[in-house]
Image (cartoon, rainbow, N blue to C red; front, side, top):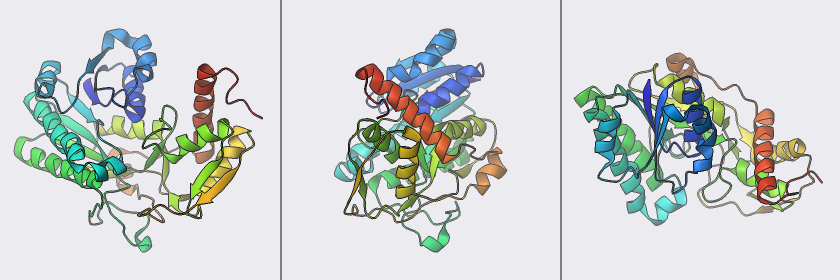
Length: 326
């Protein structure tokens, strides 16, 4: 299979690239490296430089369509996005330019290249708005009422996927991702709490928990998520699938689990809850099991330990002696 991965130098994208390369596929990465990191592709490039091509290109650029026509992929995995909810609130035009118009260029390129399918990274954390706790775990059949420009742009992209399938026969699967964590996640910017906690714990810095720490999230490991994308290349048709664990984990439990796994003494403090933060969230993944044959398998303990080990190694490379157990 010849595949394109937009955002392929990012946290999730590069993990998917590793999987595709390991299984012998030809992969073209499209990334503008605004948040992606070339180092994330080093292992894949070392393994299969003859089957991995990297294009330094913004999905918003006029050349995006032509580049996809040139590459002629069978499947496009579309992960490139403006992914910061706060940025979307501060600059909704930029958010829409990337996530709506950028996605349209990807779809036009895929259509004109006669691609078979687009697998799209949607947002399980924003798509359903603020449903009642009685709806947990959230199902794909719930009304889609995103309350941030970021969530709206992701919903709009799904609407375009539906339209392109109906008009042009371009198949798709949209994956509504829960809180993805794991190695390569950047602890800065709109980072997941696991990456932030890992760096602060290993650096001996106080960890801030907003609210009472009893708010819950559905934390799903990046390798499991990459497997869902991989399966969606050949399974599922015209569907939205939640990708998570179906389990709620409180921030307090997450913190204490990570401290135990790190072997490092740590302190934490509580700050007022951030405005608009959901009290509880987790996703029902029954449909992903039915459509993709997928379910998550990585438990929180081993997953956070692998993340901590990755961050410890990175800190040691940046500052010898950093991140060592106290």
